[in-house]
Image 1 (cartoon, helix red, strand yellow):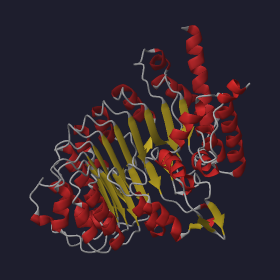
Image 2: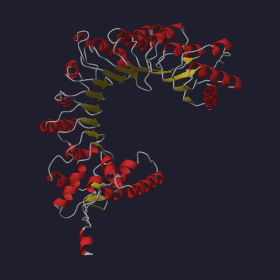
Image 3: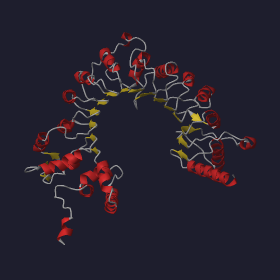
Image 4: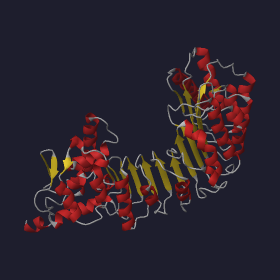
Amino acid sequence: MSRKKSRVAHHPPQTLTARDQCLRNQDLLQEILTFGARNPADLMSARRTLYSAALTSKVFSGCAVRILWRRLSHLLPLLRLLPTFRLEGGVYIVPGLVTEEEWAVVRRYAAYVRDIEFEPYPGGVSLHPSVYVLLAMRGRPLFPNLRRLALLTTDYVAEMLLCLSAGVKSLTLESVSGVWAQTFFDRLVSDGAHLSYLSFWNCDRSNPPLLNSITFQTLKVLELYGMGAGFTAAHLTEVASLPELQSFATDMAAWDNVEFTSFARQSLFQTLTELKIIAIPARLHRNISDLLSAVGARDMQSLSIGAVMGGRWEATTHSAAVFSAIMRCIGAPWATTLRHLNVLHIPGSHDDLAPLGQVTGLQSVSLTHVLHEPLSDARALSVIRALTNLRTLEIDGPGAEADVTFLRCLAEHCPALRTLRVAYTAAPPPALDAAAAAAPAPYHLLEELRFIPLGRGDTWNRTKITRLAQYFDHFFPALVAIRGEGHLWWEEVEQLVFECQDRRRRTS
């Protein structure tokens, strides 16, 4: 009997197994389960499922805990590993001494953490200052394998300072003062960090933090939104000269003092592959043409330019000039490299679309509130015929409506297309010609049709539903989904298309 007892492994209370962590650490469970459960009932159901899986699988708990610890939104899950950690008077404390064995458990699970995006502590509670001192005394880094940090409020500056380390590759700062931003940069520089991703959101009213960020010559992605006054041509030159920069995003805030005449044509952003600009209409009209002319990237693959939601154009000629400038720029230097184009809330005309037909490598195009004329217009169809590599097409704008002619053009000239999102005209489709229906057509592999509401009266009847289904099945026999936003009639169209597919399978 004694020999059998000697084989039983006993775990001290502070050395929790992976299963114990998975089942007992409520903060950790909530971190993960909240992603898929947004109300208490779902959360309780998910906990029961997890509990059952952990009890029935010997290998589940260890793997699950390692995955669940990868992302945290505050320090509570880590601190709960300490046996004496408790809530007292609305403040979390760690009374007494913490043994080395207890710290070993903390270090073990802290090593799993890769991503921290600080969010408020549940219930509005806080940590006692002595807890920060205790963590700081244990030495840095607190999370040795941390790769991403996001601070969206100044309420967690102390936690941020505890988490900064040489291993951090991605940093997001939002609504943080310039003083604190500079402190974070100084700490990262002294630690020897090599940031590859940096995002600023409404952070600063002066330039020193921006200049400090340029210290990180390893940056591959840089986002600047809501920057303070004083952004100059010199700052833009520093940003554009980062040797490894691949993606740049901005709202061009405080760019009023940038003199683009000081830049030679195609002299900036030589290494860029992605450019994203979302700005108020006035800034786009003032700067976008000069900026695009100054960009010298030879391998631009993704371009996204748009006006902010609710922004008003002073004149239609302003938006037309911006759209025309975008089309001119993509039609020459990036005709062979551009793969993704996204234009938002910049009203333009079919007259300016012609350069788009030169970019034959495009795989996705999204034009939201840009075009306002029927898509069966000859100018639009001429462009569509050239985009043979297109996989995703989205055109959303009042008046920019698709019809049978447009769909036929896509079916005949865009064999790679898999997803289409457009508004379909309210006009009833003509009957499908019997000879055309019997003639063999290319087997197009389009999978998904999504239709946008027209924003005006649309009359439906059984004839229209039947004819639409016949055309869709004829042009795109491999459809797996038809969705209509704001209209249940599209579900009937989808059902008829599926019935056509079933009949074809039975007779083949």
